[in-house]
Amino acid sequence: MFGRVILVNPNSSRRISMQVDEAVSTLAEDLGVEVEIATSEDGPAAIESDDDVAAAVEPMIETAARHPADAYVIACFSDPGIGEMRATLEAPVFGIAESAVLAAMSRGRNVGVISAVDEAVPRHYRYWDRIGVTSRVVGDVPTGRGVLNLEGEEAYEDVLDAGRQLAEAGADVVVLGCTGMTHLRARLQTDLDLPVIEPCQAALTFAASALRDSHADEECAQ
Image 1 (cartoon, rainbow, N blue to C red):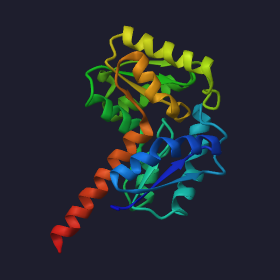
Image 2: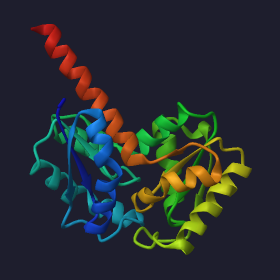
Image 3: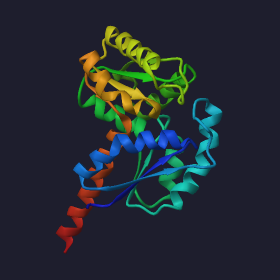
Image 4: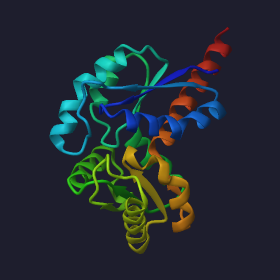
């Protein structure tokens, strides 16, 4: 094993934590890292509004501090508090939104994002501006469904419709813009016939790569 990665769920939903765990557990074995999902018990029940994002930061960092690790992943697509968390913790910190878009840009020229609620879209675009990827994002389409309302066939049809709108807008790779969608990646990729990026998997892949590099550096120094 190259190290231990904690994926911090900044909301207090254990269902979301279970979905994140299901999304990354097999991948973690393949990447040679140990993973644990830490739920921020004092965080919002779901992170949808800007107020939710702000309220999630302090409990998330406190949760991370109680779980020593070699790397951390913020398992919320808004990457709440990523700057503060990087400044507080010595280990590297990866946001799933930043990681997903970077991974998507390696798979296609035009990136489309499927969001949960309408209110998330302006926040996402502010973030794309901040990290310098706006020119590669051709659309961000919300399903109109909350983070905790993305299971079942009707929810899938809404996600699929958003993906089709993005494909019509020119997207050649699609990002799932909510941890509530982790379980939909494989089916959606088949139905859209486009690469679909699951953000928690993308962030874990980057974290594992960083740990492998660190391990190699330590071996070279011996």
